[in-house]
Image (tube, rainbow, N blue to C red; front, top):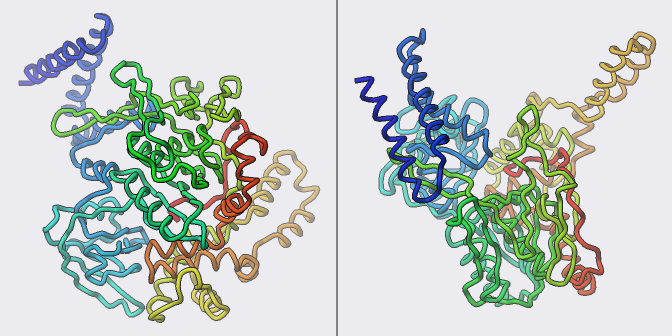
Length: 572
């Protein structure tokens, strides 16, 4: 029986190689090398299964081996088991069967972070802050978020029973929900920043992204918009053709947007706009950040290369690789990097060279010596090899250690839950602010809560102290070190007042989201957003806007390696 299995494995491998030989040529030596390696792998698993001291799970072990093998290539080539296909489809279509709620870990339990408007959780009165105790009668205490997410998802029309805990008194509530087809919009919000400036938040590139942006621009123009701000910050990308459709809103029909080049000719392609645009003249600013990647970079890069608009913000991620999905046996799939993409100027913005690794196996950024210059339509100099450099840079916001601690330890989130339970309504998102009384209530709420942190000064002090001990100077300056330590040790109460403004900003956005949901959170963030404010300045100053596009303002800088940042993660 074992010999039969082994022969089947080898036979399937040979068949696969013969089957692919019509597409591309593999030398006989390479064919034999692959067959030999697969034979070794089979015998290895067989021996482990027979002789390892504990019982192993061959399927899980093999999957780990596959994942480790693919991880040695690049982060985007991945094996998709049958159990993960639903999540993979959601990433490309924005659709799944479920209750329509965002969940997050909070201690040993998982809580509802946000119910999506119009879907089962929202319609059945599920609130942000509700603690999940059971799903279909099974306890979810100490389960991972991904496990609970899988339990909540399912075929539309099926039911799921939840037991939740709500409020200070810990009241337990049972809920019966009927799953629906959940369709997450690519544009969670668009609206007017002022009487003449429209704003569009584009958070993903799943199916219909181009259509949603097209509809948003059309609607904003009807409301009086004479300029558009397109926000791609934190957008990780998605479908390539949807990036083309988004560009098409502002670019004439028939314009090349991106071309792909792979090892195989079948992956070489040119993508052009194929619809009539909405407006090719309306002033346009595109906002980018380090979290803007892939399809976001195609949009921003094309707008920049064609001098169609101004890029404001930070340098983008630098992902210029294209993935294709290939079917495998037993309803599994392989997402494999098959090509690189090139935007209209001819540049590829890939920032990391995965084909040439350092001696320790790590990857590095493409060195300056391999970065080339290109020209935009109007002759401005732009560069490859490092993402999209903004035309008008704005440094990313940085936050104090106490703010980061309060957010990451869910204390801002938890306070918003308490606030929501005692306030029936609040003003509109743009008008709401945290009052003195609200902030005092927050500081009282924090009493007895764990939100320890270390300031940058304390971190540097510890480094200096260790260096002094290594260099044998510490004993000579012990008294000075002790005095300095006393002076720079942080005081939580003092820091709560020193950094009140930035803490209040996070409090306001979280509280607003309880009443106005995702749209409200975005609306609340815009008035004090420095990147949005810079975009408005650029659009209001017609000379500045035009000087960027004709090159007199100065070309985007040459990319250098990304530096570590003190930014809060995008999902906070």
